[in-house]
Amino acid sequence: MKRVVVGLSGGVDSSVAAWLLKEQGYEVIGMFMKNWHDDSVTISDECPWLDDSNDAMIVAQHLGIPFQAIDLSREYKERIVDYMFAEYQAGRTPNPDVLCNREIKFDIFLNTALKLGADFVATGHYARKAETVINGKTVYRLIAGKDPNKDQSYFLCQLTQRQLAKALFPVGELLKPDVRAIAKKVGLATAEKKDSQGLCFVGKVHLPDFLQQRLEPKRGKVINVPADAAVFQREATDVDLEAISRPYALHPESGPLIGEHTGAHFYTIGQRRGLNLGGFEEPLFVIGTDTAANVIYTGMGEQHPGLYRKALFIPTSDTHWIREDLRLESGHSKKFLARIRYRQPLEVCTLHQRDMGLYIVFDRPQRGITPGQFAAWYDEGELMGSGVIS
Image 1 (cartoon, helix red, strand yellow):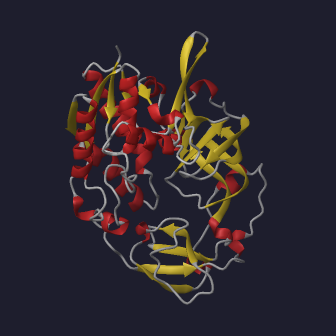
Image 2 (image 1 turned 45 degrees about the horizontal axis):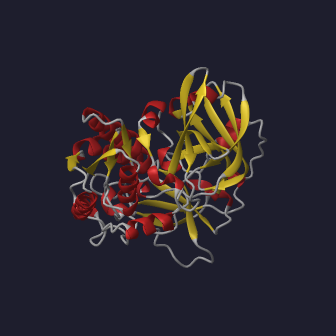
Image 3 (image 1 turned 90 degrees about the horizontal axis):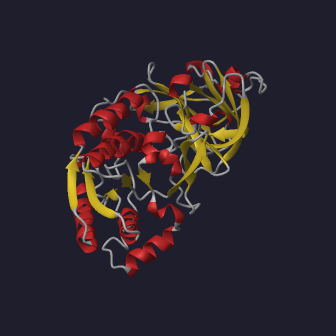
C-alpha cells in the first residue's frame, strides 16, 4: 500500500482528492500548511487560515485519515513574501502562487512528507501527470487539467522532474461540477465552500495595504502617453528579436503630466483601478512604470498601443524546462502555444533560443506583458517549460 500525504487546504478540491486516493487504496495522511499569521491585511470575511485549518481537520475526521498541521510561516515569509516585496520594489510584478508551488508545496512540504515515509504528495490542482520512457529513463509529463475552465497547470510551471515524480493530482481528470457532486455525495463539509481567492495561503488582500507594510508611499508623476507618440512607431521584424521584445522606452517627455500617484511600485502593467484620475474620454491604463524615478505612464483606451507587445525575453538564468529532453538548443526555433498569465487563452507563438536567453514571439501582439510574471509554453496540452519575463 502506497502512502500519500495530501495537502488539505480546507477547500473542496483537496478534500475530494483525499477521498479519491483513499478509494483507490492508498494510505492517506492529511496535512494542513499554516503559512500566514497576519490577518491585519486580509479582507475580514475572506479566509482567515484558522477556518481553513478547521475545515481540513473536519474532512480528515470524516474520511477517517490521520491529520496534522505544520507551521511553515517562517519559510513562507523568507521564500515568498520577501521575494514579493523585492520584486515590487524593483518595479516587477511577481506571481507568488507559482513560487509557492515550487518553493513550499513541492519542496518543504514534499520533503516533510517524505520524512513521514510518504511515496507521494497530492494536491487539489486541476492538472494531470503522465509518464513516458525515453532511452530507458522515465520522463514525467505535466498536462493541462481536463476542465478547461479550471486548468491550473500554469501554477505548476516551475516544477522539476524530481518534484513531478512524487506528485499526484487526483482531480485533474474531473470537471469542477463533478468534484462538487462527489463532495456532496460523500458528505464532505467543504462541498459547498466557495473557492479561495487572493494570495496563496494568505487569502484575499488589499494589495496596497499589504505592500505598505514595507514599501513606503511616495508621491510621483503620472504621465499620459498619446497613442500616436513616436515611441510606439518603431519598425521591427521577427528577425530583430531584441528590438521587438524590448519594453517601450518611455520617459517624462513622452506625454503631458496629468496627476500624481502614491508610489510607482504599487502599480503594474495593464492596471486600471487605483489611478484615481477622472475626466478622460476613455479609461486610463498603466502602460509603464519607473520605480527608480517614481513615475508611472498611462495610456487612454483599451486599444492603446502601449498595452500591447509582440514579443518578450526570458534570460537563460530564468528559463526552466520541465521537459529537459526537449529543451531547444541555441540557434533553434519552434512553434508552441503560450500564456503569460493564469486563465489567459493559449496563444500561438515561436520560441527562439539564443545564448543569452529565450525570445517568445507571438503571432499576434499580447496585452499587458509584465516583467516578473511567468510565461509558460505548451505543446498539444503538455506544459513544456516556463520562465520569468524580463
